[in-house]
Length: 165
Image 1: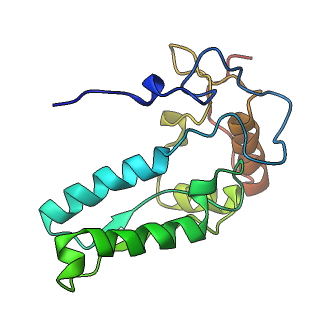
Image 2 (image 1 turned 90 degrees about the horizontal axis):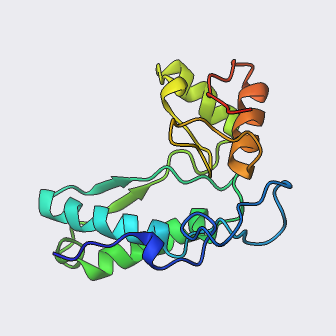
């Protein structure tokens, strides 16, 4: 069994402590918080497990509306991965098509928060921060914290996020 983490690859402010997490707002282009191949790795693992279980559906929570410019959060990427999954698996080749579902992909952060709230999600148990502390408190200044706070404000729902500042 090989055990590795994405930190071994580096190349991202989220996996390499020598790269600073930006706190000056979302910039144009692909940000330094992009983790190389993260969604490809996670979807590949989900694909392998789905095939073993006989599942024909994989769900992923990527979002292409209020996101930081990650290329693996776009509808084109999800469609391409689904095509690849059906070319690369026994189930797909034998006509048992697998589908990748990304139900949040075209929703704004406010729409996602409203939907979760309606479904009873306890957002106080979640954290989106790129640099949360050991207690899980969010920094309030990274792109992810700002996008989250803006989403709660736009949704008209109080933000239960535990912030350090």
